[in-house]
Image 1 (cartoon, helix red, strand yellow):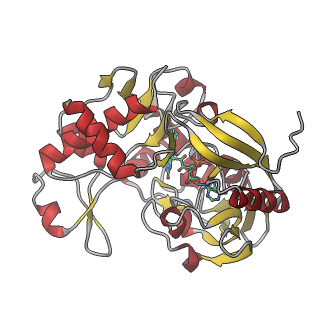
Image 2 (image 1 turned 120 degrees about the vertical axis):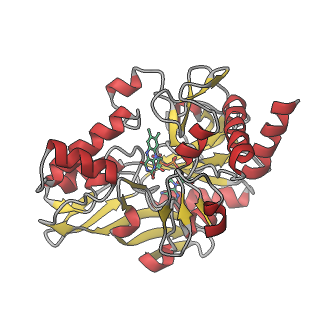
Length: 363
Ligand SMILES: Cc1cc2nc3c(=O)[nH]c(=O)nc-3n(C[C@H](O)[C@H](O)[C@H](O)COP(=O)(O)OP(=O)(O)OC[C@H]3O[C@@H](n4cnc5c(N)ncnc54)[C@H](O)[C@@H]3O)c2cc1C
């Protein structure tokens, strides 16, 4: 049915548009690949004083049970172009894996470890997606966005994105830019990145010392499958199908906090002097094991960092479990974990929402 409103369709359930498969509806949802249609919708939303949220594939998203009282815009798939010099341009609505596939097939190095990450191109810079030793900030040279404050299209450089670990300026100011397309600079004929320990071991056992891009991509997919972090038929048929990937980021501790951890804690020194500690290790050492469940929300049976909807979970169930895990780690190590997914429809904000969920555990 054609909807004449610039704001799209009313009262659209969001749960089916997310990988966690939970949460309430959006007041309005508009799907488009046209910047002019997007601009009209943003104007109409501003006039109606409606909040706006840009949705990709919903794979890094926790939607509240009440849903979102505003306009959700989803960018439809668009163009992908690869050039002989290694430049790749892709529209925001293109599936991220389509870009990885095309790059590996064309012999362009730089994305082979970023295979198997669900979602869209437009979301990739938001949390600076990363895995197995690569992150999108390594290859992104610029992007085109709609600037909601200026009301026009803008070209942003790598420096403008202000990337950090699973972070960017976009994540910190979510109401400013809608990413429309990104430009990546890959390396034609370049060697694959085999930096991450687990991947290095696997590649040297299975492939040898001169792996191709396709071989590294294959081994990354194998490792991801083992952790139910690849949404293929096997994972989708199992108990860990509905997650948002890692629910917590790996904490970056200052030297004193890191020194206070037990001697056997894994530690990864960062160039700025901080120390990254695997959140999965902290969780396991706090007595929360894989498969631990609070009602229909559970820790993945394959990966301690993923919280899953086992079927019929509400956002409140997932939050209780997240609060349980966060509390266990804080009590054991004095470290407060930070959630990775974006919270939508929680007016109090992430911390206050988790604090309230934690209080409900005690009640
Ligand atoms: C099984 C599984 C494995 C995962 N593995 C990884 C991993 O290895 N590494 C990793 O980094 N992440 C991982 N993730 C998280 C997720 O896939 C990525 O963060 C992905 O980039 C999210 O894309 P999306 O299109 O689904 O975004 P959404 O979840 O729809 O949105 C995420 C954020 O991006 C914003 N956004 C989306 N599109 C745009 C746009 N065009 N303009 C402006 N803002 C936009 C949204 O507003 C929101 O703030 C995993 C998730 C799952 C379910």
